[in-house]
Image 1 (cartoon, helix red, strand yellow):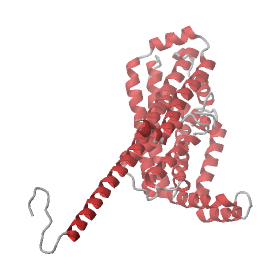
Image 2 (cartoon, helix red, strand yellow):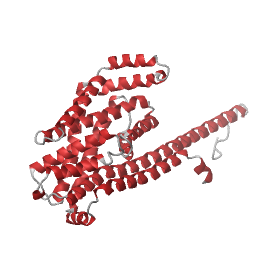
Image 3 (cartoon, one colour):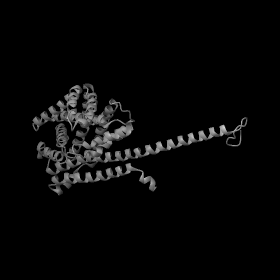
Image 4 (cartoon, rainbow, N blue to C red):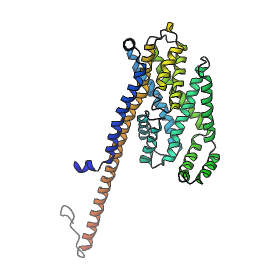
Length: 372
């Protein structure tokens, strides 16, 4: 047991991740809750009045989001020529959720690390799939936010500017020849020159993933997936006593899309503070008190949607990481076992050949059971 424990470096990595995730969740929950707990008694009353069975369809709609996002992820992985069982690809995709509380979600590069471990694909190539995921999700969110911006005048100029930046990024990534020329220029610089080889691989992979047909499919999948979370937010609002009208659905879609974009642009861990404060503020701003909105209901809705999306994702991601680490430990042991069996068979074959060579002429060697 002691020898086995000493020879398992993945366990220390797994333990460090397992320790990091709960601490990160507790920290973010605390910092998220403090600014919105204006009146604890009213907040408790809002939670008591909530229709709690609605949590089930809310979480199912969140899983709907994850399922369609995985379809897009696996499409990207296959497009890059990486052959993985879909079950492994799914766990790698979900493992990225454990890093949702890292600044700007840069921790999702963990998915590229796992792809290298299980397929050998270089990170400079697979990181393009992660960038494509983020960018096409952003474009889908701009479309959803734009649907609400038609009715609500808030933030139209900022949304237009953000969408323009995202489209410019897409246009550049669709021109690998132009980007490769820029990379070649950077290669002449003494400091960054060595890293340009990675840039070339990233540009080539991005050129594949951002082809117009792939882009349309990816944005379409993004719209399908994120609409699920918008409906989940709508259900939470109805569960808190608001009238389930078409206008409320439009408000829920607009708020979730806008705050998700703002949280991502802030580069804060999980959009901490920006997304949470934005959700609560926009709820109070867009829904009249006569319609049932209050500061306590806005705070309760914010906490419920964040726990049902961000924290739910972190928990699923942590489980996926543990599953992948177990698989990574099992594979070397299985390989060693197979090599041991093959080595033993080869030794027995060599031993038998030597016995045959040593047997006198005309005498057959005795086999197991004493029969010639």
